Length: 66
Image (cartoon, rainbow, N blue to C red):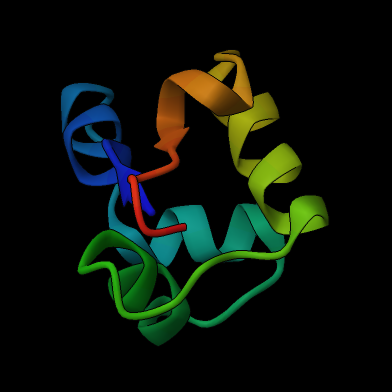
């Protein structure tokens, strides 16, 4: 799964630590999501989309092998 989380976060001047705190996960989890090493749960993806006021499918996109 591809994502634009890092770009969105940086454009809004939010640190990984701040985003993690807002959605209730560790900074390491946000880092892993941004690097494509961890696919967030539906609940977590929805929380992140609410923080950015952006639809989930604008932040996360399925790839051909997903």
